[in-house]
Length: 66
Image 1 (spheres, rainbow, N blue to C red):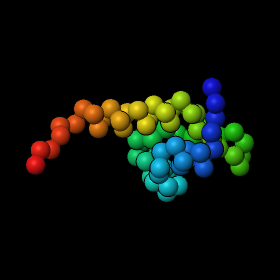
Image 2: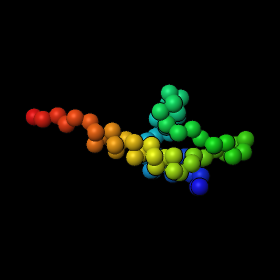
Image 3: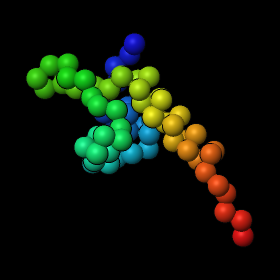
């Protein structure tokens, strides 16, 4: 299991800092792990699963035809 810092989470997801924290607030994004009083990180596999869920939602959504 690997813990990753916010900068890496932002690179992986394409989300900004405030978007990540907003998604966490409404419980639609993995929560961070508190490592020390001043240091937090995320579980990399949970971030990968979140990304895969977004891809699955895209693939399972009905396509609009023009």
